[in-house]
Length: 258
Image (cartoon, rainbow, N blue to C red; front, side):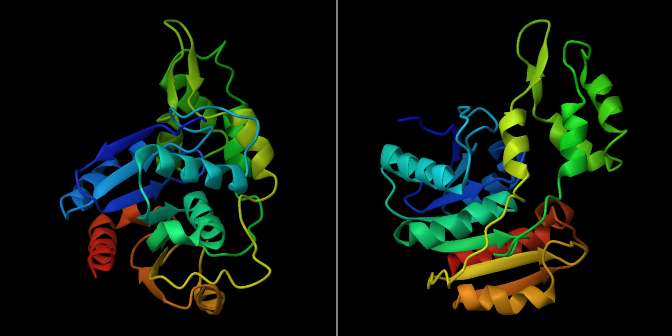
């Protein structure tokens, strides 16, 4: 049994599992995790398979990722937890709430809806695949290369966090780019034919300026999650927890404590 890498912050019997987005890692959420832990929670920053410091595997889909969570719970002796999932991590939370609802208390879904998305990462992935680490020997050079494909500097900086020294002389990505590229062709999303039927409290937060979730999706969200609250986060896009962190944390902590 392979166990996901995690960073654990806090020492409480109330557990919060944070599921990061595509091409991310648990460390992206460290600042928020510290603040949530101060409210009496133990926060688990997971690196999903093929991301961060977790294991690489050619098998990559929502079913295998859900099994990893199940194995992690068994390994850490956790029976139930609250979940926070952003983007792909939110899609994984949908899948878990459909397949393994008994392990969830509450869910916070960050800027994603339970619907089919087309491949929205194509230019990002083409940019990443253009990087040849036998020719590139610094993050600055990698950034210059990525800038031909990705104009948003913040997105580039997010991706460059996963660049590390594989050896003294060679850089590499912490994520398994080839496997993730193949996975992305299906749109990195779930479409559920029938109601998910998770009855526990669920909070959907979506960015006012994001094109991932809009008010037309509210009906679909309420169909799948009958105990859902939906909040539009002002002045924020897809990374709403970074764009408007105080608002995000206030709503999330209030919900987890309620």
